[in-house]
Image (cartoon, rainbow, N blue to C red; front, side):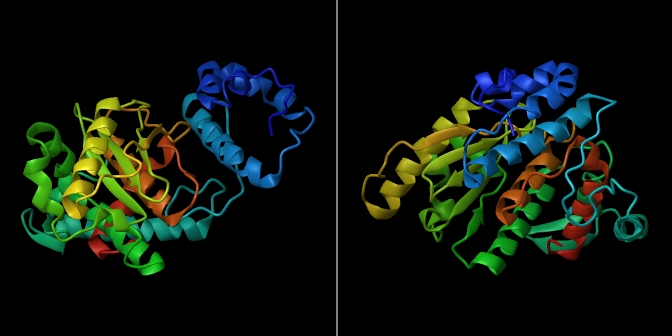
Length: 312
């Protein structure tokens, strides 16, 4: 844990690990001296969020520093890459990959493989999950629905709701009236979290309406700050609350939190997969224990879960 006397740039910038990542190699060399200082005097509860950020920053360093390896010793979720050559984990991933490849090789291109969130998922849809492809809107909508269903099984019906990938695009281009009826039978304010996949400038991001905290959290795998998106979503919430209750939203301005120190993509095609993984981790309540290096395997897990119609 960083000490109060540490001269690391992230300490000077409210523990912003982006500053550390700018230094990359210098940060790696400085780690021993940074961690050797006296403790901060904070309680463990205070330090847990910082420890989580440390993990993400170190995992991102693995993506950018060829000679740096980080091991956190935690138990990873199914089919994440085996860092220690775990045979059981490799076998599990192998069976998933075999199943996905079998379906794609033996089913006709236009055949529906499953139905979820109002979509018929076809071979072409699943193919966008694999290799160096952009995930299409069907895949992301279906995966968001799987995430919401998992949350309902664990936390009850009022836990998480997922809006469609077309929600923000229509809100931006046509305004509130065009989507007013989309939530006619849904009370968004009764949920703990509302997931909003955002497609803007050929890039996927995830906005999360944190109803409990009265906050809009924005997750972007390229570190973008989409101020316009948050402003439009805030205006939507005000109008939706007025429409549903006849009363003013209180408070009428929620905090906008552009979340830093999240796993980041290192290419131009993984943004949709990152959105799916962000949503899954948030709803499970677990740290972001993956990095760009994990995506080849995690893409197969996403495809497998879509075929199975449930998250592992």
